[in-house]
Length: 215
Image 1 (cartoon, rainbow, N blue to C red):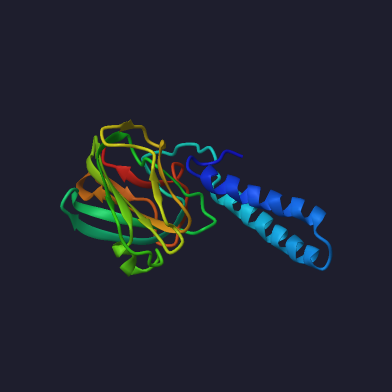
Image 2: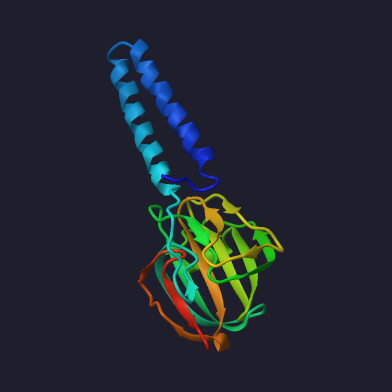
């Protein structure tokens, strides 16, 4: 199983703690031994949860504009954005069991990356727009596209894989949000033929088409 860049910093310490407790059981007598065994089992469970969370599976890249994040489409709205102009915002909620590696929706150049500190309100709430976030502005052949990675209650850090000026292909990895979170993408309305997803759809980053481009 391939592990996402930035995930080993969590997984390795967790497994080391697990190893420590299993070794400790050899030298501890009952009844404390049962307490140590319980802690070992709990630590082992946490280690495997982290292993699943930080998985980074290969993806077959889809057609058109593809999903940035794994998760459930929670909102599709028309917006007026200062960088994208008239646009459609597609918001995806990423639960703790989703793959949390985000991918490029279309070929383009990273025009800017802006990090904002903030709160850690649950990502499915409207108020989560006040949370810590990373804003990526992309220059593409259909104009500017904006991606906003938003941290949630458990997500304490957004790890970018790209930097300003990078040329990135569709489906390539652009970052990781540790634990539950949300990703919004802003697409220029005049360049989009149709939105191919609806609210409550489950989507996978890089694979599922979320919009078709005007010919």
